[in-house]
Length: 299
Image (cartoon, rainbow, N blue to C red; front, top):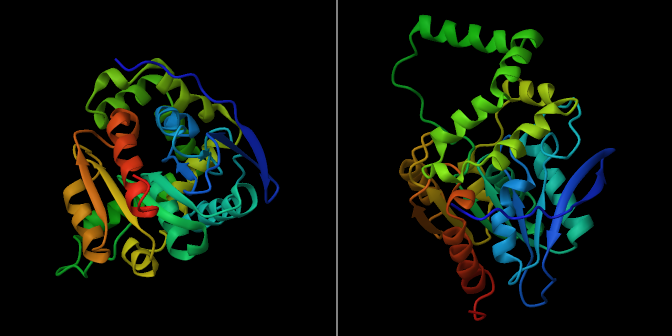
């Protein structure tokens, strides 16, 4: 059982008329860039608590709630990688004031990849933990079965309707369902504490949360990962929980390697959120990589 870590009291920043929540720990260092942590879908700065505690003695560490999540505002917008890319870039520019190493999990990894690829002046390096986002897929050799295609279209159009989407949201936000979902994606069940469930449940009670959830089905897919990787030039560290049931980490890792051969990668005995499940391993690998690769000579 891992020891509970007290949350850090954060601050708010006004971005495009919306309140954005963030936390900061550690002192600025002239010989190394800051670290900016970006959570996944449904999570928040709370999900990085163990990493902030473990890394703040070596780096200035920031974590931010993306618009629509955590303690940040939840306006009725079209949520996309481009929106979060611009939010992160403006936060780095206006609040942190210098390029950072971005570290993102799942959806947060995709948003961080968008920054590193399309706003390179903000990124000194990139760390991706079980990164989400689509790759360009080859054309299928045969078209999908008409019945299967029709069913998929009907299911999607149904979820675009306000009532079915709202009812689904009310179901998945139940604490029992949150626990059940986490038990599927965490190998070490002892990490799934009441505190973790509360951290995920709490933002779902905020005004606008059902609309943010619905936007997942409405928003078009963003730029493909392979296109983003072709635009990127900064150092890349990939940390994979290799028991993630939501993605085949080895297969996805090979795709990232195909499009960005000069990367560093590690596969950890963990699920979808290795930073929370095996924080000691993640913190050690991230620290070593930052000191040896991003600012060589400091280790």
